[in-house]
Length: 269
Image 1 (tube, rainbow, N blue to C red):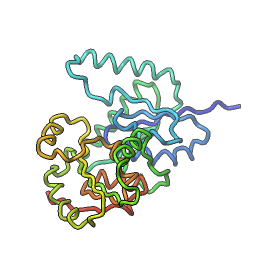
Image 2 (cartoon, rainbow, N blue to C red; image 1 turned 120 degrees about the vertical axis):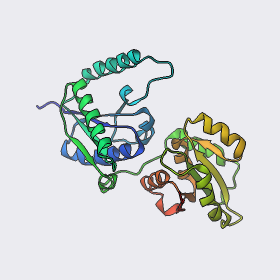
Image 3 (tube, one colour; image 1 turned 180 degrees about the horizontal axis):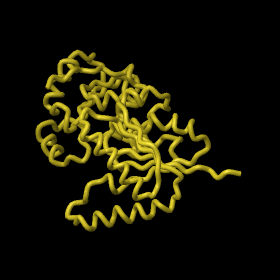
């Protein structure tokens, strides 16, 4: 009786790469029926696979994380090498790399080189699949679900709200390539003014662990919630209407099957 294949799937930093891996997984499992699967990705993307029954094992790769404050280069290098040494004990049959391509050829090549290094450290071969995210998203896949902590957060937030009151959430997203929060807020403001008076509105800024931005918002927008993307998924799961100008929030809504509740506002940069 042939032994069961054990296959690793690697993807790099960023939401697009995680969604590409999530979308590609179904087809890979069709091509390798009965295999055991191990995902290697950044710790920051773990929440996207938390409720995915297709993923029995998700291992955050230290090599995909930056050095900790005050950590020396040598300590960081040794930490990464020690993890790869442990991962060799998984005895993978192959490792497949998934990458959502970007307009920059240099960055695409950098990602491919990064995956080759992972293969070298694991002592294993496997395909590298790099294409546009929209191509990956053609595949069938289960709906993205908010995790229990995110749902508990939303439940706590709405516990004093009348159950019959429609819930709207306006989500602003802080990221490097997006318009600033002030610009997003200006774009959303006219849409929010048109909401019925009986709608329960929550305004939230998805800022992750950006402490400097958190301090600024405490002063400039004290009424806004400050949260991370997993918590935002909890609000999206509960909301009757999601208002945003962010591509990231739009993608999350689509993956959760909530596009019908989305009001997308154009933000002019």
